[in-house]
Picture 1 (cartoon, rainbow, N blue to C red):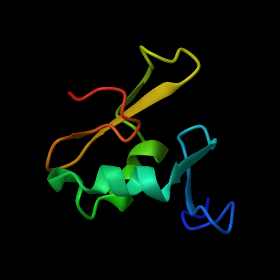
Picture 2 (cartoon, rainbow, N blue to C red; picture 1 turned 45 degrees about the vertical axis):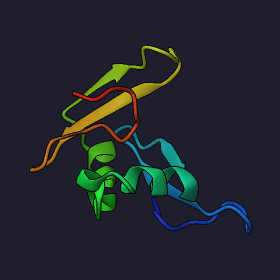
Picture 3 (cartoon, rainbow, N blue to C red; picture 1 turned 180 degrees about the vertical axis):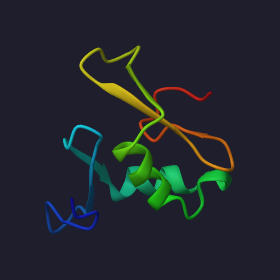
Length: 86
């Protein structure tokens, strides 16, 4: 999936494919929020890799129809879905 595809001219969307080849989208605002955390600086590729090949997947505790994909990086556990910090 192309991580740079735009859905709308006014709102830039980053698209990724998850481990089950489902489309995952992050708005520019959400991605920028994630990347503002010091440990997440320059981690877009790690987010993409975690979605595609997570260490484990669990159901979201707050939104049962959503899953949380969890991965690990040299810096720490990476949870791009924002479900929980480990």
